[in-house]
Structures are given as structure tokens and as C-alpha cells.
Image (tube, rainbow over all chains, first blue to last red; front, side, top):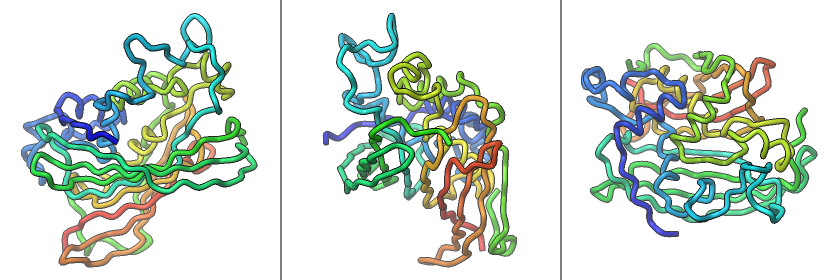
Length: 160
Length: 140
């Protein structure tokens, strides 16, 4: 997979923290953050996943000139039937070497991991696939590693 | 505010209400910042008629982010070494979530003092939506 450049910016961190309902000043107030142990604004622990914004081919973002599978005039903007009820997120794991800070320019590389299958009562056949993502900073140092497990379900998850 | 080894005991817990009456607008905000515009999280028409769910539901990563707020409030800023979760049930608009960290171990590794935590986030019906573990650096 191609390497993605992920510039970490203060306004993105501020908006991300709002989107996870976290009012901690260390994510938006430079003056208050300067007085903390970390000495300045840092990103919240799950922020790294926002690298999706910088992936030119990310499939869960509408793109110029392409049909989008979400609703518009009708319930979906595509005519073909999707192959399955879609993917869900099963697991997410982060390992941190240091916090991300505004001004970091990360180089991000994702590699496929294992895949496996399982039968479930609630959603039929489940196909799991793992992706390992390494985030390196402007000095080439590894700052964060993420392991993500996605699952494709045969049918929508039944509600218990 | 960092944790001190002397203040921690195995089995001790820290809990927080991390979201009250989760709004659909919060899901829109999360889509906008994370870049995950999957219509399952913001587009009721698509989600009901095409995907076959009762309606939009939260990004797993939003629930992990809310859980992370509890963790960083507990262990301090920039102190996490590891944070991992499984998404065990979907989270829906209107849900209120409580997150709990339980001290599983207090140990030393490579000259650092660490705490291992087990994590659980549950909804208003007591159903677990996220289960996981974390490791954080603590002060001696």
C-alpha cells in the first residue's frame, strides 16, 4: 500500500477532541497545555485513525466525479447491489511511543495482516481481516502502531 | 495529573459517564473529523433501506474515543503506552455510556513503572459495547 503523508494540525486536533466530547484543554488551549507535563498541545489517543482524511483513495469518503453509495434522491446513489451488508469494525489496538503533536508530519504505511472466518448466530458467516498501520514522524521514528480488525458480515447484525 | 504507584491497588476502579443521550449530530461531528463518512453512521435512509439496520449507529472509533477520554482523565495526558479494544455491541443514538478502568497489574519494565488496566464501556442497559485493555506509565 502507498505511504500516506499525514500532517498533524492543531485545528484538526481541536475538532477531533470535540467530536469525541473531550473538553480537556490539552487538546485545544496552547497556553493551558504549555503548563502541563506534556508541555503543549497533543492529540487524543485515537486521533491517529484520522489518517483516513489524507488517504486519497479512502473508500468511505465521497469523491469528485464518482457515484456515492449513500442516499440522495433515493436510498442509495448506486444501482448495483452491494456485495454484502458491509464492513464493521471488530477490534482496534494502538501502541504509542510518544503523543502526536501539531507540526508533526507523519508517514503512514498500512500492511495487511491475517484473515480468518467464523460462524455467528447474529450475523451469519463473519470474515475478519487485520491491517497493521505504522506511523513514523519527520525523523523517521516510529511514534504509533495500530492494529485494526475489520469484519464483513453475511447479513446485518441481529439486535438482541 | 499523573498516577502514582503508591496510590494504586490491584482491583481499584475509575468510572465515568462518557456520553449522555448520544446525538446523531455527534456522529456527524465524528464523521467529519475522522474522515470516516460511512453512511451507516449519518444516513438513516441508506442504513434502514439498504443496509437493513434500525437506523444509524455510532462509529466504533467514536466509542473508543469516548472510552479514551475516561482513560486519559484517569492516567494523565501523554501517559498511555497501549490501548486496545473489541467492539462487542453497537452504540445507538440516545445511548448513554459509562466507561470503567480496573487496575489489573502494577509492574516495572525497562526502568518504567506501569499500570495495566482492563476496560469496559457499557450502555444504559448494562450491555457491554467495548471491552479492552490499556497500559500507562505511572510515577513511582
